[in-house]
Structure formats: C-alpha cells, structure tokens
Length: 457
Image (cartoon, rainbow, N blue to C red; front, side):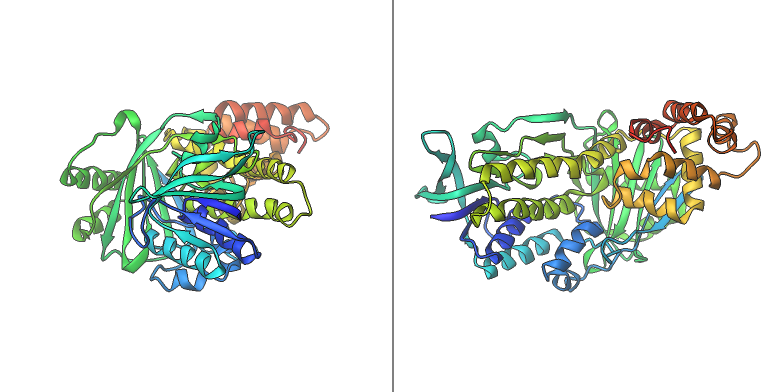
C-alpha cells in the first residue's frame, strides 16, 4: 500500500513525487515512457517563479550546470515601440533559464528517485480502482509486455499531461475552455550572441520570439493565428520565420541569415482550459489540470508551482492532521486563484491582435517607467498578477510617463486630464476615465474596469 501513486513522471509528476518522498511518504511513480528518452516539444523557458522552486529544492545548480545561461530581461517590440526591462525578483530570484527539456526531466526524476520514490517505467494505466462509494483507492495498469500491475494508495495523482488518462477515467470536466488560438514554429540556431534577454515581437498578427537556451543555442520561433498558419517544409519555414523578423528587427534577421539552424522545425498548439482537479481519492496537477496557450512560455513554471501547491495542500492530510477531501478542495481553490488571472491574460495575448494607437502609447510609457516596464514583463513571466498590474492606481500612474503635447492623440490626452487634471473631488471623472480606457485599450482596460477598486484610485 502506497501513500500516493503519481501517474506521469515528467516535470509535474516527478516534482510531486520528489516533494512527497522527501516528506517521508511512500510514493509510486508510473510512466509509459523509458527514461532518459524522448524530447518534449517545449520552448524550455522557466520563469523566475519556477527557478525559485528549483532553488528551494536544491536543484538549480544542476540545472545551470547543463549549459543554459541566466536570462535577466524580457522585451516586447511592436512597430516602433520597444520595451526591454529587468525581471522583478521573486524572493531574491530575478533570473530565468531555458534548459534542455530532456535534461530538466532527468534532473527532477533523479531527485524523486533519490528521495525515495519508486519509479516504474513502461507502465500504462488502464483503470482506477475504487471502493464501494466511488473513492479512488489505486490503479490497474500493464507493463510493456502486458503483465498486469495492481497497486493501492490513499491518493492517486494524475500528472499525465493535457490528454490525461486519469482525468478521462474519473470524468474530470473542463471549464473556461477555449480552442487553439495560434500555432507556432520554433527551432534552435547556433552562433547567435547570448545577451541574457528574451525578445518578443508583435506585428501584423505575428508573434516572433527568441532567447538563449542550452549548449550555446538560441530558440527562434514564430506564432501565427490558426487561420494564417500553413504546414510546410523546413526551407519554407525558414523563409517564413526569418521574414517575420525582417519586418520588426532587420539586424537580428540578418544574423539569422548569416548563421544556421541546427535542428528540425517543431510545431506546437494547445487549447486553453481548466479541469476540475480533484475528487474522492484523486487529484490532477500540471497540464492534466490546467493548460494554457504556450505563447507566454509558462508551462514548465506552472508545473513546478502546481506540484508544490498540491503537496502543501495534501501533506497535512496524509500525516493525519486534516481531512483529505477538505485538503483537495483547498488545493483546487488555491490553484484557481493562482492561475486564473494569468490564464485570462495568456488567452488574450494568444489571439495575436495588433495593438492600436492607444495601446502602443501605453507600452511606450511603460518603456519610460522602470517600475511599469518591470511590472509588464513580470506579468508575462507569471510573477506579477494581472489584477495587480492593471489596478487603477498602477495604470493611472502610467499617465505620468506620457509626455505632454499632441503626439499621444486626443483620446490619451483626454483620459490623462480625467485621471490627473480633473479636480480630485469629482470621483465620476476617474470612473469615466476607467471606462474610456476599457473602451480603447483592449485587455489593459478590461482588467482595469474589472478591478474592484476601479474608479477609487
């Protein structure tokens, strides 16, 4: 009898198993794959909240030793507007890394086994065992040679990806579900300079991106709305991606033409959804419980945070200090509170809409304000909650960084007067300003208007 069976031994599963085993619980970790092996189709980036977890767990030095340099700044460029800012710190951690995915999987899995988790590879889950009241009490699985495997546990955790078998077997329903919004091409380039920066570009409904990764390589890619994406051969993809950079960063495009792609093009696209992530005797973690578009490169970070969140919730129940059902319900509430704002922000970002004049003025103002610039890239990196960044006080303060004169346009000038020039004893003026922002500034305004403090700043 195990305390916990974890199905899926990659990032979220290995992290969950490691933390539980370190806490002294008997953990069985199952996966249909053989390790090391396989190559995750991921862009590898781990934002500072994920790096903080790796540091806490004593694994960051191993990750850094794989040959991935620290990344300290993120940027966004749209047309002539450029923003590049330092990442804000999370408990002293202000760096991202982009390790090779297979090596990160291996580091986490080795840590789980070293902590005492029992790993069984080439095992496929077939059924979940339940008691007479419908509570999950174990698994029925098969090895590669069809040998049956039956094991029991107090809790079964599905960490088996967005197409989770555990989720299917328990009937875990999706909610806040949205279709695939874009598709991406990306690959690895050699001989590009590393300067510790993530660069993203938004132009003509294209989202180009690049950052340094492992072994002296650089990830280069392009996301396109589904309707604009075309499957093509490697040579045509080279042309498509390099041409997209030519539009927004000719100097970088010239470097691409002078260097070389050293891997095949990969393609990625995922839907956006949350799943009900717990029930009697079971829980979901990582992509099994929550999947959002990869345009913000947050999948690995979310998996690491989710594993820690689940273990923090269930460990008191496993030790006998709390009811397991209540602990799992608390995990679900905390997960939704943690990811809800970034899920919505990512979904909006994934539509790859071009910025209007007013949005560009706001981004230009963020580039002038170190506080706002850091906050903007921190939101992309899952550090700063969107509700905090788009709070009335923060957005209103941004008007201090929009210069006087006609250049910003009459809409911005009018809203700036309502926010900064109207008499402070006229709160309706501020509420009107917030409504105008909502009407003209896309997601910025929508988040602002949804804030419970809207109009009160």
